[in-house]
Length: 85
Image (cartoon, rainbow, N blue to C red; front, side, top):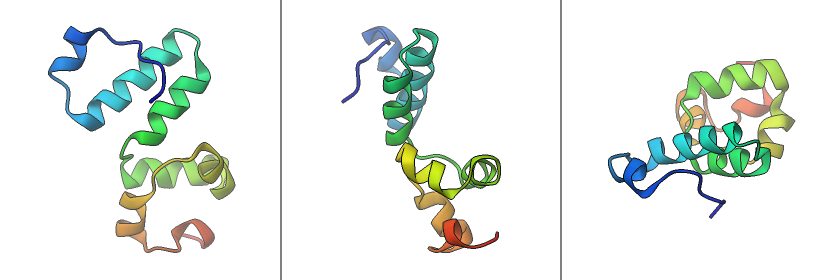
């Protein structure tokens, strides 16, 4: 697991996915870009956010960041990264 920046108290009431997002934001706030991306790569990112990231940064960027794409695959099809959506 990436380095944690959240207190145990803050972690206590978060869902798993919210925890990953909050840890990513906290790592980013602390200037730890690597941990921020590692935490985000664990999170389930909403399909529209992944599609926006693809349009802004490209499919290879999503792959390089290691982002989970299950939500987008479900919404747009398994090959969504390799075709125009």
